[in-house]
Amino acid sequence: MRLFIFTFTFALIFAGMASISAPVLAGDLQPVAKYKAWRLFVAGEGGDKICTIIAEPAASTPKSVRRGDVFISVNHRPAQQTFYEVAVQVGYPFSAISEPFATIDSNVFKFFSGVQAHNDADESAWLYHLEDAPKMIKAMRAGSALIFKGTSARGTLVEDNYSLFGFTAALAALDMACAQL
Image (tube, rainbow, N blue to C red; front, side, top):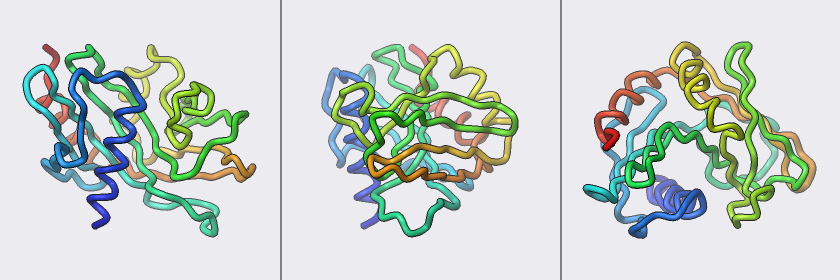
């Protein structure tokens, strides 16, 4: 059941990220493989193919906060010429003034939230500077942990700790599953 909820939420995030030529339905997303902390999902075929790798946090604080689905993803949508799109689902609506960010070792990566983008994806965030994607992917390949922080609409600073074990293998599988056209 958790996989269905996870997959359904994932489909909703795709709908909020960008326009997609063919709608992606929850039933279309297929788990393909698992690489330690990371899972590969694929939806669609040909020009409408969408691929993503996803990890759930190994730990979150504060523990008392009630949340929905929480995960980080790296997405390829070849038809839109979108590759290495880093997105986060936090399971709570962001504050309008939240400045979410991720750290990997000494690297800090700024994100923007769906609240700031006014795209009805209030629980999602994306890498703020697209040109930082290669640097972030490189840091994810070399690192062992990623920490994501954001402030909820209630003013709570929330921290999610993600394992990067398996990321390099998952990224290679992502690239093979959804190669650039």
